[in-house]
Image (cartoon, rainbow, N blue to C red):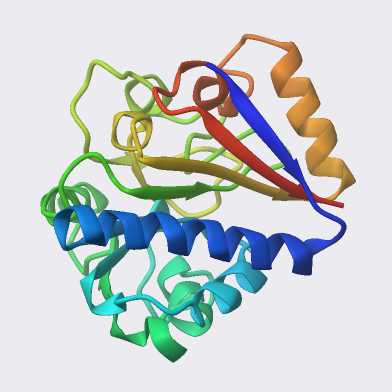
Length: 232
């Protein structure tokens, strides 16, 4: 699958440009179907982008925001992606958006995944906008090398759903949208910053082993061409 690389002078310039691109995609989705869906990733990289996006002028009351992946921790936990999004995105004009969490206070992570699958399915398919990140180990979403459910997570023949994932590099057990939930998004973005991530991307593009670097699945098999946004 093809991809396009968009390079920016710094993270601030990237955040502004990416916020504008995402806002236009959300506006187009609202114009077409009176609703829009946005799935975002956690980590420190998207904070400036979230802040910029929260100021974009669009009908946020018609936007549903969910997560690409989440740790199995409550929303007030310091490592919760829900908390990150609530702090940096769901404010200003974006405060009117609906948030669809992946975490649910169930007795097991499997039960939480079932609840989240139902909630995310209500957003419809395909998702309008998906923003992915990438770790230094080549993971994206919670598709971790060595993950216990990695093969199923990357199987495009399986239905869109929220799947559980545990891996030595993941820390807490994870909930993640499956690749089949992400691969056909209207707009599919990989947002990375720094020289280290550039080197990881180059390594990923040079090889084929998806188990070693699961980001390769997205770069090679996603139905939607991947737009890569990078700044040093």
